[in-house]
Image (cartoon, rainbow, N blue to C red; front, side, top):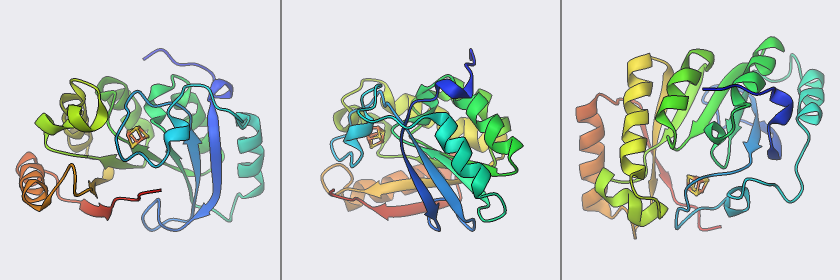
Length: 201
Ligand code: SF4
């Protein structure tokens, strides 16, 4: 994966403190702009376009993190889809250099990029949204199910600390399909599975 300087990371927003987005850690969340998918229930639709309406400069994020050293444990790159941006690797390195752990929220849109990033990540929250054959109806992107499950293989193979997160949406994942999905994930070797409610806003 061709890398770009962290300064070119397009940031759509920042949560200065969270206790729930990085298990066991006090963290800030950097919302990366842009996502290639169009999930029907997306609650961050403003982060889907590659250009932010009001982008936050990466230098501003770094300044904030400088001031929070010793108060926060980690930084989670979320989105949008963080792995869309080629400057993510450099931005993660800068965050590590400040002494923070690095977390990643991803839908697994880019398994090859994810594989290259995994050695530089301390924890991954991977969204698995549906059975592979049902993905395209949810994301509007053909092949998205194959990408997500390829990313799952990368995460499990890397042995990185992780959580596989399933969003419970009645329309796309009714109970029988949810149960089949959990069984499939277990069969693939996933153990840290979390079911999370679908947010409507
Ligand atoms: S992958 Fe996430 S950010 Fe992208 S459209 Fe789906 S829910 Fe929204």
